[in-house]
Structure formats: structure tokens, C-alpha cells
Image (cartoon, rainbow, N blue to C red; front, side, top):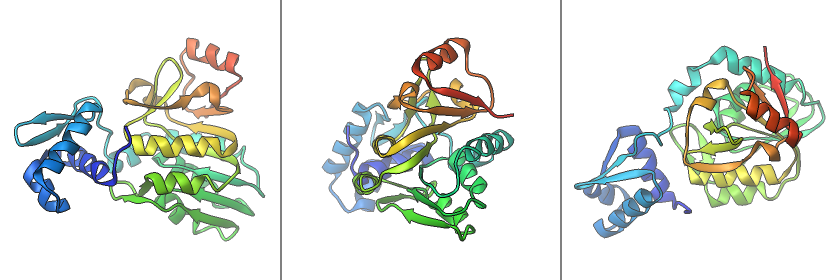
Length: 253
């Protein structure tokens, strides 16, 4: 299901406030009650919301942790992961950084890299790398997600299609035991897929907490990546799968 800009905003409101009401949303977006009911029905069918009388609630188990909380979680682990990843990114290269607090940690480790071009849909990444005079920053267009400074949507996806970069560094919301990268927002998933398609090498950066979580939308498989940077060894079955796929597992310490 491809979410519209309005549906994406409705989902963000539901995740932030726990509940949305049809009448309030109709007034907010200046559309009919029937239009909002249809939006809520689509979001419920996609597994993001549960319909209740007069509105909908965010479905338990498919709501991402808020950005401010995620930003301070596992900070030391994220910093170690970022250092390990940045050590494999040379000067004089181009790369894409997507949304996520771990990719923002990577951006901080790139502040002293020279002659790099960074393409991003993460406003926080762009603001971090302003401090690097040797970094050219390209920021995607799209719908701004106020909750975390991310840009998503069809415009963002199309923007990344104009590039071919040396590296993609992406974060995820969850990783299952099949090696599938998972996320909550279908609009963000489409952007992440476009990013992977435009990179010569693809890196995943994630702390070990992502292995204990679940999310409803699939981005890709670890088999499609060159390396995963994490802070604890992956479970043995997943490590064996990565060996078979040729995906390096780098444990930062």
C-alpha cells in the first residue's frame, strides 16, 4: 500500500497521540468526514491502526519508539558502530545516509572526512555535516516528517533515483531472524529501497536492540547488503546465513 501524504501525517499523529478522531482530522485537513473514514480504513487494512468508534488508535506492536527516546537509547553502542562504519568510508567518495539515530551518529564520525558528497533525506544529518567544510551536502525533497526531521514520499524516492553513489549507509527499525530488514512507515521503506538501488556498496548500521523488535514492512534482506555494523554478535544461525550470502558482520567494540 502506498500511503498518501495525508495518510502518512494521520499515522504520525496516531503514533504521537495514541488516538485520532474523524471529525478533528477532517477539520485539520479540510476534507470530508467520508474521506477521513476512507483513510482510516486504508490504514487499518494495512495493519497500522485499529478502528474505534469515532476514529482509530495506533495498533499495539507496530508503533515505533518516539524519536527523542530513540536518540538517547544505546548512545555508546551507536557511537562505536558509527566509528567502525566511518572507518570504512574513505575520503573522496560519495554516499547516501538515510533516516535514523544511528545514521546520524555516522554523520558525526564523518565531520573530519575530506572531499565527500553526502546525499540525505535526514535533516539532522545535513545539520551535523554543515560543520565539515570538505563535505558537499545534497538534501532530498519530499514531505517533512516533523517527528524526526525525515523527508519521505514519492518526491524523495524520485530524487534518489538521480544519483549513483559509492556507499549507502542505512538504519532500520528491526531485523528478523530471516535476515529481513523491517520498518514501520511504507513511505520510508520505498525510499530505503531506492537508496539501496543507487549504491555500489550498501552498509546497515544497527544496535543489537533491533533484533528484539518487530515491524510490519520489509525493506530488503541482509543478503542484498555488503556489510552490517552492530555492537553484539548476531545469533549463530543469522551469522551462518550472512557467511553464505557474503555479507560481512562487523561487531564494533
